[in-house]
Length: 432
Ligand SMILES: *Cc1c(COP(=O)(O)O)cnc(C)c1O
Image 1 (spheres, rainbow, N blue to C red):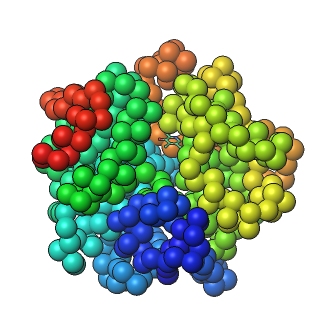
Image 2: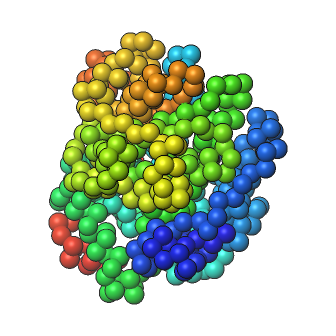
């Protein structure tokens, strides 16, 4: 499988090149040259298939030129070593919990897969050391730090906005040490993001260090996210109603991975993109006009994105036609009051504690099911509620039990380097 830049379809690169580059030199996102079809027999036997065998069959066509099956299997075993349970909410709705990984966020799947791939390329080629440079508003940093910890040949530098991430999130990215460094930026997330973008274009830095990104733009973080849609389907083999999946969306990488799974043959009838008030995509589906906006802060802050990077990939999946897109995708937006109300509803009606992102997903699903009562729906619960402890405890007026993975964090010592402008980042990257 080759990958091409959505800006210049003629220039194709290998999977490993696409992973190391992150984004194409023409600033386009990489896209697979074709989407492989799984044979019908695959879905007949999926229920009893070994989970890692299944994952291997799904991922193999995307990476086989660069990673042999045996190594890919090992990578998948290390990536998927936790559960993805479906918790029933009522007879028509289930919560697909994606937060049972080491940092309690769905981003663990993509981050771990990407880390293992880069580690493999490095041991195979003994290439130049790679520096993963990433800006985070919260969950990405922890998942990337954890996924890359101790991976040979890779340094990770994470920029996060001082005082703007939760305590748990900060500890997850500042306490690991080894090949992981955290830079605490005197500014907001956009400042971090801008510094990272500037560094990628700074020849003085790029001649000294091979930089790559670790956000969902990177194909190695984006594509493995399709695996838990298959894992969910595997658990629903007795379900006869058509399946609809609601995905709380920010940069639209997660939902876009689900759509690739669907294109490969996975029987998902429809997708719902559930957003907070940062509603660029719901507005586009309503009006046909795509207008990026400046992101507004909300309770579901991992989805505070005004111009979702992966939306161009979604358009491509549906041949850049509005009709095909709306046939497969509905999108709804909800504000913080509605989100809190949904968290309370889930708690009082089903004794289910959700985080604000999952609650937005639940709301989108409810809205769709009102019009489509014959469907069965899943919403993706993308983070453990303790990652948003304040909001959850205040909204539900209850205490949330801390998982042991979190308790031990509070005993560790934070180490970070304060920076306040681009020159300081540049000096850091050139000197260390
Ligand atoms: C990153 C994140 C999202 C948004 O996922 P996208 O792939 O960017 O759409 C949703 N919920 C949580 C908890 C996240 O961390």
